[in-house]
Image (cartoon, rainbow, N blue to C red; front, side, top):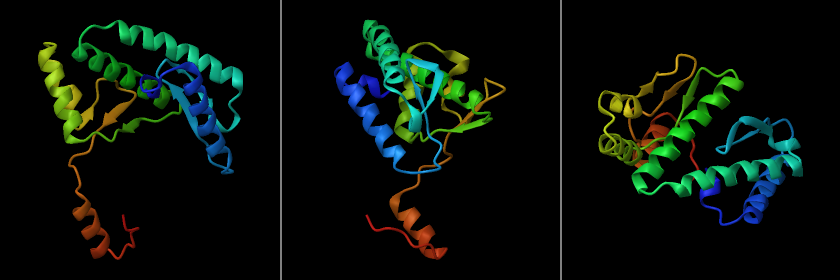
Length: 167
């Protein structure tokens, strides 16, 4: 969903190019790129061509037109969330993954809950905020059970003899 933050196609092209350059520095790392504009097309970052980048930017422009056509902030957030989830599921299916672990925090989950209530989702509210979203039998979306504070992580590392990098 990085296309929402970028101002224009050239800026987006430069960000994708920079990402490709970073990935190409490391041999043997298999990185994939999927755009929210076209989740069917999953590309390898290390071998992405200029034409593939152009097609991504075109798909993202189409997505942005749909996104910007929505009137309310709630509708925009819901559209973005549904599209992201569909994209994650599509990528997981193509990579033969049965589970996707998303880094949701309490704020995201609370926002999603209020959004679902505002949109009148009723009984399906729980699917968007529970630990496991198993509406799709092939790919399950998993969320954290608990937020971990920095102190909790530091103590875990200390008690288990794990060296951490100071922040």
